[in-house]
Amino acid sequence: MIKVHNLNKIYKSVHALKDVNLHVKSGELFAYLGPNGAGKSTTIRILTGLTQPNSGSVSLNGFDLKNSSIKSRQQCGLVPQSINLDQELSVYENLTIHGLLFRMGKAERNEKIEELLNYVDLSHRQQSLVKELSGGMKRRLMIARALMHSPSVLFLDEPTVGLDAGMRRKIWALIKKIQQQGTTIFLTTHYIEEAEFLADRVAFLDTGTLLVVDTPSNLMTTLGTWALDRLIDDKMEPIYFNSRDDANHYIATHKESFTLRRVNLEDAFLSMTGKKVK
Ligand SMILES: Nc1ncnc2c1ncn2[C@@H]1O[C@H](COP(=O)(O)OP(=O)(O)OP(=O)(O)O)[C@@H](O)[C@H]1O
Ligand SMILES: [Mg+2]
Image (cartoon, rainbow, N blue to C red; front, side, top):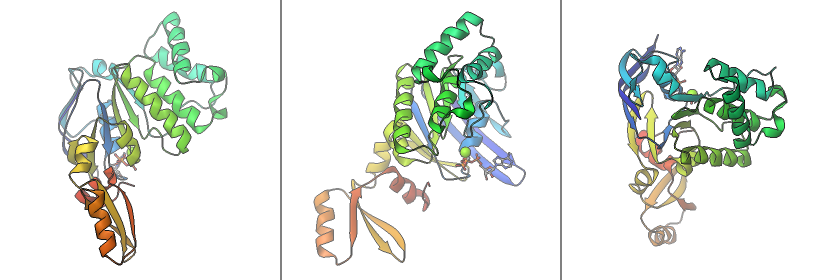
Protein backbone atom coordinates (compact mmCIF):
# COMPACT_ATOMS: atom_id res chain seq x y z
CA MET A 1 0.00 0.00 0.00
CA ILE A 2 2.65 2.54 1.07
CA LYS A 3 6.15 2.02 -0.29
CA VAL A 4 8.93 4.40 0.66
CA HIS A 5 12.43 3.98 -0.73
CA ASN A 6 15.54 5.80 0.51
CA LEU A 7 13.70 8.98 1.47
CA ASN A 8 15.79 12.03 2.39
CA LYS A 9 14.61 15.47 3.45
CA ILE A 10 16.98 18.30 4.17
CA TYR A 11 15.77 21.66 5.49
CA LYS A 12 18.44 24.38 5.40
CA SER A 13 20.55 23.11 8.29
CA VAL A 14 18.58 20.02 9.37
CA HIS A 15 18.81 16.58 7.79
CA ALA A 16 15.23 15.70 8.85
CA LEU A 17 14.95 12.27 7.15
CA LYS A 18 17.90 10.00 6.42
CA ASP A 19 17.43 7.16 3.92
CA VAL A 20 14.05 6.10 5.30
CA ASN A 21 12.63 2.85 3.88
CA LEU A 22 9.11 1.70 4.74
CA HIS A 23 6.57 -0.78 3.50
CA VAL A 24 3.06 -0.48 4.99
CA LYS A 25 0.66 -3.27 4.09
CA SER A 26 -2.88 -2.78 2.89
CA GLY A 27 -5.36 -2.67 5.80
CA GLU A 28 -2.60 -2.32 8.36
CA LEU A 29 -2.53 0.12 11.27
CA PHE A 30 1.03 1.37 11.30
CA ALA A 31 2.29 3.58 14.14
CA TYR A 32 5.24 5.90 13.65
CA LEU A 33 6.81 6.68 16.98
CA GLY A 34 9.53 9.15 17.88
CA PRO A 35 10.40 12.11 20.12
CA ASN A 36 9.91 15.79 19.18
CA GLY A 37 11.74 16.65 15.99
CA ALA A 38 12.27 13.01 14.95
CA GLY A 39 10.77 13.68 11.50
CA LYS A 40 7.28 12.20 11.90
CA SER A 41 5.32 15.14 10.50
CA THR A 42 7.89 15.63 7.74
CA THR A 43 7.32 12.02 6.63
CA ILE A 44 3.53 12.50 6.59
CA ARG A 45 3.86 15.78 4.72
CA ILE A 46 5.94 14.06 2.05
CA LEU A 47 3.66 11.02 1.78
CA THR A 48 0.60 13.25 1.35
CA GLY A 49 2.29 15.43 -1.28
CA LEU A 50 2.51 18.60 0.84
CA THR A 51 6.27 18.83 0.58
CA GLN A 52 8.91 17.36 -1.71
CA PRO A 53 11.71 15.05 -0.57
CA ASN A 54 15.30 15.82 -1.62
CA SER A 55 15.67 12.25 -2.82
CA GLY A 56 13.91 8.91 -2.68
CA SER A 57 10.60 7.60 -3.96
CA VAL A 58 7.09 7.05 -2.59
CA SER A 59 4.17 5.09 -3.98
CA LEU A 60 0.66 4.85 -2.60
CA ASN A 61 -1.57 2.01 -3.73
CA GLY A 62 0.70 1.52 -6.74
CA PHE A 63 0.67 5.21 -7.78
CA ASP A 64 4.05 6.90 -7.77
CA LEU A 65 3.92 10.24 -5.93
CA LYS A 66 6.16 11.94 -8.49
CA ASN A 67 4.70 10.58 -11.72
CA SER A 68 1.03 10.33 -10.75
CA SER A 69 0.74 12.91 -8.01
CA ILE A 70 -3.01 13.56 -8.39
CA LYS A 71 -3.86 9.85 -8.33
CA SER A 72 -1.63 9.20 -5.35
CA ARG A 73 -2.99 12.23 -3.44
CA GLN A 74 -6.54 11.02 -3.99
CA GLN A 75 -5.55 7.83 -2.16
CA CYS A 76 -4.89 9.71 1.06
CA GLY A 77 -6.84 11.43 3.76
CA LEU A 78 -4.89 13.64 6.17
CA VAL A 79 -5.54 14.70 9.74
CA PRO A 80 -2.73 17.19 10.36
CA GLN A 81 -1.04 17.77 13.70
CA SER A 82 -2.51 21.24 14.24
CA ILE A 83 -6.18 22.05 13.90
CA ASN A 84 -6.76 23.70 10.54
CA LEU A 85 -10.56 23.78 10.36
CA ASP A 86 -12.33 26.96 9.35
CA GLN A 87 -13.35 28.19 12.81
CA GLU A 88 -15.93 30.70 11.58
CA LEU A 89 -17.82 28.13 9.50
CA SER A 90 -20.16 25.40 10.69
CA VAL A 91 -19.34 21.71 10.98
CA TYR A 92 -21.47 21.02 7.91
CA GLU A 93 -19.83 23.80 5.88
CA ASN A 94 -16.32 22.58 6.69
CA LEU A 95 -17.19 19.16 5.28
CA THR A 96 -18.95 20.70 2.26
CA ILE A 97 -15.84 22.68 1.31
CA HIS A 98 -13.70 19.55 1.40
CA GLY A 99 -16.25 17.71 -0.77
CA LEU A 100 -16.18 20.59 -3.28
CA LEU A 101 -12.38 20.46 -3.40
CA PHE A 102 -12.61 16.82 -4.38
CA ARG A 103 -15.29 17.64 -6.97
CA MET A 104 -18.00 15.59 -5.30
CA GLY A 105 -21.53 16.23 -6.62
CA LYS A 106 -24.18 17.69 -4.29
CA ALA A 107 -26.14 14.48 -3.67
CA GLU A 108 -23.00 12.38 -3.10
CA ARG A 109 -21.54 15.08 -0.84
CA ASN A 110 -24.61 15.47 1.34
CA GLU A 111 -25.04 11.73 1.69
CA LYS A 112 -21.39 11.32 2.71
CA ILE A 113 -21.59 14.20 5.20
CA GLU A 114 -24.63 12.67 6.87
CA GLU A 115 -22.95 9.25 7.03
CA LEU A 116 -19.69 10.65 8.45
CA LEU A 117 -21.30 12.95 11.02
CA ASN A 118 -23.16 9.95 12.30
CA TYR A 119 -19.95 7.92 12.24
CA VAL A 120 -17.97 10.41 14.35
CA ASP A 121 -20.94 11.22 16.58
CA LEU A 122 -21.35 14.85 15.56
CA SER A 123 -24.77 14.80 13.85
CA HIS A 124 -26.28 16.83 16.68
CA ARG A 125 -23.65 19.58 16.18
CA GLN A 126 -23.74 19.88 12.40
CA GLN A 127 -24.95 23.50 12.45
CA SER A 128 -22.54 24.62 15.22
CA LEU A 129 -19.64 26.88 14.34
CA VAL A 130 -16.31 25.09 14.70
CA LYS A 131 -15.12 27.65 17.26
CA GLU A 132 -17.95 26.48 19.54
CA LEU A 133 -16.74 22.85 19.59
CA SER A 134 -14.59 21.13 22.23
CA GLY A 135 -11.07 19.90 21.35
CA GLY A 136 -12.26 16.30 21.02
CA MET A 137 -15.12 17.30 18.72
CA LYS A 138 -12.71 19.25 16.50
CA ARG A 139 -10.42 16.20 16.21
CA ARG A 140 -13.41 14.03 15.28
CA LEU A 141 -14.49 16.57 12.69
CA MET A 142 -10.96 16.57 11.20
CA ILE A 143 -11.16 12.77 10.94
CA ALA A 144 -14.58 13.02 9.22
CA ARG A 145 -13.19 15.64 6.83
CA ALA A 146 -10.23 13.41 5.94
CA LEU A 147 -12.63 10.55 5.12
CA MET A 148 -14.97 12.61 2.87
CA HIS A 149 -13.41 11.45 -0.42
CA SER A 150 -13.16 7.80 0.76
CA PRO A 151 -9.34 7.56 0.82
CA SER A 152 -7.67 4.15 0.90
CA VAL A 153 -5.08 5.35 3.42
CA LEU A 154 -5.64 7.69 6.35
CA PHE A 155 -2.72 9.67 7.82
CA LEU A 156 -3.23 10.75 11.41
CA ASP A 157 -0.58 13.09 12.81
CA GLU A 158 -0.87 13.00 16.61
CA PRO A 159 -4.67 12.60 16.56
CA THR A 160 -5.19 12.64 20.33
CA VAL A 161 -2.68 15.25 21.49
CA GLY A 162 -4.07 17.48 24.24
CA LEU A 163 -7.20 15.38 24.81
CA ASP A 164 -8.30 13.86 28.13
CA ALA A 165 -8.09 10.10 28.66
CA GLY A 166 -11.81 9.51 27.99
CA MET A 167 -11.82 11.36 24.67
CA ARG A 168 -8.54 9.71 23.68
CA ARG A 169 -10.16 6.30 24.10
CA LYS A 170 -13.19 7.40 22.11
CA ILE A 171 -10.88 8.40 19.24
CA TRP A 172 -8.98 5.11 19.54
CA ALA A 173 -12.28 3.26 19.09
CA LEU A 174 -13.06 5.41 16.05
CA ILE A 175 -9.62 4.71 14.54
CA LYS A 176 -10.10 0.95 15.05
CA LYS A 177 -13.52 1.17 13.41
CA ILE A 178 -12.04 2.97 10.38
CA GLN A 179 -9.38 0.25 10.04
CA GLN A 180 -12.04 -2.47 10.30
CA GLN A 181 -13.81 -0.90 7.31
CA GLY A 182 -10.65 -1.63 5.27
CA THR A 183 -8.74 1.66 5.41
CA THR A 184 -4.97 1.53 5.88
CA ILE A 185 -3.88 3.78 8.74
CA PHE A 186 -0.57 5.56 9.25
CA LEU A 187 -0.48 7.16 12.68
CA THR A 188 2.14 9.23 14.46
CA THR A 189 2.03 9.53 18.20
CA HIS A 190 3.91 10.41 21.36
CA TYR A 191 1.61 8.24 23.41
CA ILE A 192 3.22 4.85 23.90
CA GLU A 193 -0.01 3.27 25.09
CA GLU A 194 -1.75 4.54 21.95
CA ALA A 195 0.72 2.70 19.72
CA GLU A 196 0.61 -0.38 21.95
CA PHE A 197 -3.18 -0.48 21.90
CA LEU A 198 -3.78 0.33 18.24
CA ALA A 199 -0.85 -0.70 16.10
CA ASP A 200 -0.29 -3.86 14.10
CA ARG A 201 3.30 -2.71 13.62
CA VAL A 202 5.38 0.12 15.03
CA ALA A 203 8.32 2.04 13.58
CA PHE A 204 10.80 3.84 15.82
CA LEU A 205 12.20 7.03 14.35
CA ASP A 206 14.96 9.05 15.99
CA THR A 207 16.50 12.23 14.52
CA GLY A 208 15.49 11.24 11.01
CA THR A 209 16.72 7.63 11.15
CA LEU A 210 14.38 4.68 11.14
CA LEU A 211 15.65 2.32 13.83
CA VAL A 212 13.30 -0.65 13.65
CA VAL A 213 9.90 -1.80 12.41
CA ASP A 214 8.14 -4.66 14.19
CA THR A 215 4.99 -5.67 16.08
CA PRO A 216 4.58 -4.12 19.54
CA SER A 217 4.81 -7.53 21.20
CA ASN A 218 8.05 -8.49 19.39
CA LEU A 219 9.61 -5.15 20.33
CA MET A 220 8.70 -5.56 23.97
CA THR A 221 9.44 -9.24 24.51
CA THR A 222 13.05 -8.92 23.39
CA LEU A 223 13.61 -7.15 26.72
CA GLY A 224 11.54 -9.41 28.96
CA THR A 225 8.04 -9.28 30.42
CA TRP A 226 8.51 -7.50 33.75
CA ALA A 227 10.44 -4.36 34.65
CA LEU A 228 11.69 -3.12 37.99
CA ASP A 229 12.14 0.63 38.14
CA ARG A 230 14.79 1.87 40.52
CA LEU A 231 15.91 5.42 41.12
CA ILE A 232 19.63 5.97 40.55
CA ASP A 233 20.98 9.54 40.80
CA ASP A 234 17.53 11.01 40.12
CA LYS A 235 17.12 8.80 37.03
CA MET A 236 14.81 5.80 36.63
CA GLU A 237 16.87 2.79 35.61
CA PRO A 238 14.71 -0.22 34.78
CA ILE A 239 15.92 -3.83 35.06
CA TYR A 240 14.10 -6.45 32.98
CA PHE A 241 13.00 -10.00 33.83
CA ASN A 242 11.36 -12.81 31.94
CA SER A 243 9.20 -13.92 34.84
CA ARG A 244 7.49 -12.25 37.76
CA ASP A 245 9.13 -14.77 40.12
CA ASP A 246 12.59 -13.65 38.97
CA ALA A 247 11.63 -10.03 39.56
CA ASN A 248 10.24 -10.80 43.03
CA HIS A 249 13.38 -12.76 43.89
CA TYR A 250 15.47 -9.73 42.91
CA ILE A 251 13.34 -7.47 45.14
CA ALA A 252 13.66 -9.87 48.07
CA THR A 253 17.44 -10.03 47.78
CA HIS A 254 18.14 -6.31 47.28
CA LYS A 255 17.66 -3.56 49.84
CA GLU A 256 16.49 -0.87 47.40
CA SER A 257 13.00 0.41 46.69
CA PHE A 258 11.50 -0.73 43.39
CA THR A 259 8.33 -0.38 41.37
CA LEU A 260 7.27 -3.55 39.56
CA ARG A 261 5.43 -3.14 36.24
CA ARG A 262 5.01 -4.76 32.86
CA VAL A 263 7.50 -3.97 30.07
CA ASN A 264 6.10 -1.44 27.59
CA LEU A 265 7.08 0.07 24.24
CA GLU A 266 8.77 2.99 25.99
CA ASP A 267 11.30 0.48 27.38
CA ALA A 268 11.99 -0.82 23.88
CA PHE A 269 12.53 2.73 22.60
CA LEU A 270 14.66 3.68 25.59
CA SER A 271 16.87 0.63 25.23
CA MET A 272 17.54 1.43 21.56
CA THR A 273 18.09 5.17 21.81
CA GLY A 274 18.85 5.95 25.45
CA LYS A 275 15.96 8.46 25.31
CA LYS A 276 12.28 8.58 26.08
CA VAL A 277 9.68 9.15 23.38
CA LYS A 278 7.96 11.86 25.39
N1 LIG B 1 9.59 23.90 7.42
C1 LIG B 1 10.69 23.59 8.09
N2 LIG B 1 11.83 24.32 7.96
C2 LIG B 1 12.96 24.01 8.62
N3 LIG B 1 13.08 22.96 9.45
C3 LIG B 1 11.99 22.19 9.63
C4 LIG B 1 10.74 22.46 8.98
N4 LIG B 1 9.84 21.51 9.36
C5 LIG B 1 10.49 20.70 10.21
N5 LIG B 1 11.77 21.10 10.38
C6 LIG B 1 12.80 20.44 11.21
O1 LIG B 1 12.86 19.06 10.83
C7 LIG B 1 12.97 18.20 11.97
C8 LIG B 1 11.79 17.24 11.99
O2 LIG B 1 10.58 17.97 12.24
P1 LIG B 1 9.15 17.26 12.28
O3 LIG B 1 8.14 18.34 12.44
O4 LIG B 1 9.03 16.35 11.12
O5 LIG B 1 9.27 16.38 13.61
P2 LIG B 1 8.16 15.58 14.42
O6 LIG B 1 8.72 14.21 14.66
O7 LIG B 1 6.85 15.69 13.74
O8 LIG B 1 8.14 16.38 15.80
P3 LIG B 1 6.91 16.67 16.83
O9 LIG B 1 6.79 15.43 17.67
O10 LIG B 1 7.41 17.82 17.64
O11 LIG B 1 5.68 16.98 16.04
C9 LIG B 1 13.04 19.13 13.17
O12 LIG B 1 14.39 19.33 13.49
C10 LIG B 1 12.40 20.40 12.67
O13 LIG B 1 12.90 21.54 13.35
MG1 LIG C 1 5.03 16.43 14.29
